[in-house]
Length: 259
Image 1 (cartoon, rainbow, N blue to C red):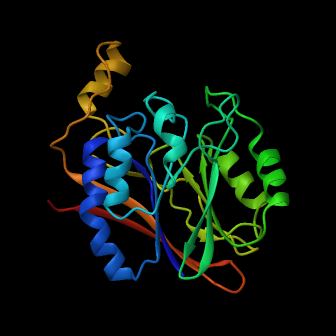
Image 2 (cartoon, rainbow, N blue to C red):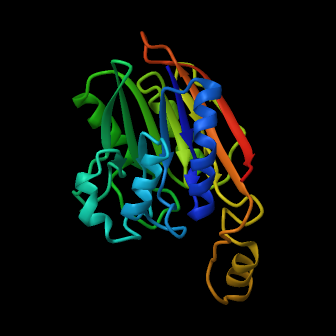
């Protein structure tokens, strides 16, 4: 089985980049299942219901979230009915939606779990390793892709090695900068510290560069998005052994998307 995972989708440019590139990638690589992190898909923070449906209609099979899961409060009203949306499983004091979901793909179960890290993150969450370990004790083995939404590359590496051989892939999101460490761990788990982002390649983590400079250097204004910017995608392809549920290959995809 071949699974395609898109890094954080940032704003309209990111949404359009996924929408335009996805059919071509599925055809070119023979993709069976598509996952995308959508926590920044609506105006750079959060996910509206309309944008959630846009991604699903574009061919994404499962959308994951992260620390901006509640930046658009309307999520409270639609998340329980959003069968293809997964929020961080270790959130404190938030019970709406699901932190893990199973999908049937070519007659096989594919589980997607979203977990949030603790290091350098302002949101309070339950211990990610303890939460994941307890969760795995309650679930049967299958192809299992984990979106670990965290800031620290070290925390992501620890998480990956700790669960090596027990999940198919641990894919980092959140920093919007793709790391050069795609590889298969000793136990057969595909790993990358951060998949990167889908959005404006000429800005700062997807936002218009001058607005970021003005905010960070001079303390003026706020981060802005350039809806007319060039489009880039960061993604990974994961090949999975359907008998062992282990990854056999992980391949990064970094591409400028033509309009």
